[in-house]
Length: 182
Image (cartoon, rainbow, N blue to C red; front, side):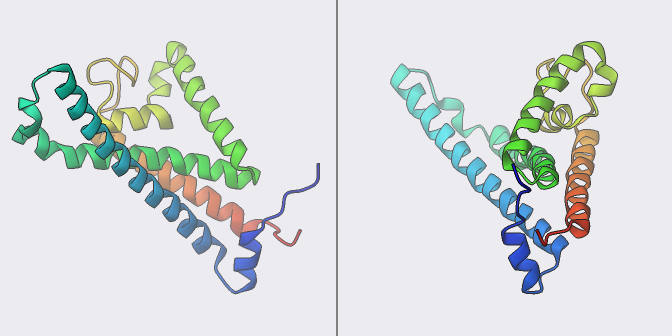
């Protein structure tokens, strides 16, 4: 199997586009689609849950609970940011390997690897990207999803930002230094 081509990046650089800027804007597009997809899934989920509760005869009186409604934007933003962090990691891997499939495959392997490693190394795993994302959205507060001792939410949000920026920096630096003439 031969070397993979840089395709669109090569064309963008030929027209004078900055490699790093191109990579960051490409990820921004990915993050935007994540935002739109999350919003669509959230909206559909609320509508379907409401319809399901109505059909099942379950009371929907709590749907207008002011405290819950006030927290929804924050929960939504935390969820999107956590997905963007994980997306940035996959984006960096895909850039390094020049393969979208590698980004997906390594992301899945990391997810399961973190889960299994959490059995033996819980103090280390809590700082890895998927556990950080779970803690950032609040999973783990009741013992679910982020191991026995998750990071506090504020620390997890900060560390998720570090993982996101670090992943984008790796992708941008690699792209700056890559030979794209092949």
